[in-house]
Image (cartoon, rainbow over all chains, first blue to last red; front, side, top):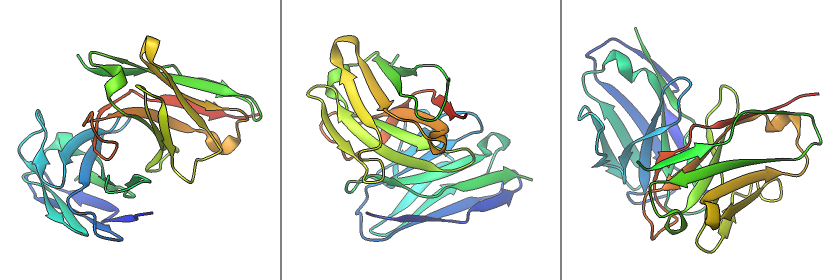
Length: 107
Length: 122
């Protein structure tokens, strides 16, 4: 099973700051890494797929990068509505797995 | 509009059985894998398993194999997650979600249901 380790677990950020969340895989997964946003009391929402592919309707301040074992989700110029938990997910092999999540709080 | 609509919240006692549902609409239900994801209170996302409604090909996470059963009825565009004997530790929110690529079970989940909260308590 591929283990995904996210860091940090929690981040408190002021609006307009840049946020960087990392996801490390226990073995190489190519670019089969996806990012989701989950706001309180809502279902997860796909933000980025295959490490860096943008999703229609997702604000351009969200971007992803990385390959192999190390991946990054970047939120440029954080907005209040971005307060949420963020999860990475690998689809390189079964069982599919998720990272433990990163909670982003707005100061 | 492509959407997955799940059945409502459930409150059950330990030992009882349960089947929750996820109805797809706005797309060809038989052509996309549907997965189930558990989220225990205050915790992260856990993949449970996945089914291809077209032929009912099903795969389970080792953590959930034997603990739940995933099925689908393509005639009514509905996937199911069921338990034969619930435990208190099954208390969680359960989401169904569609894989975005119709040709692969190794892909991102692009459409999510609203979730079904299952509470198991004596």
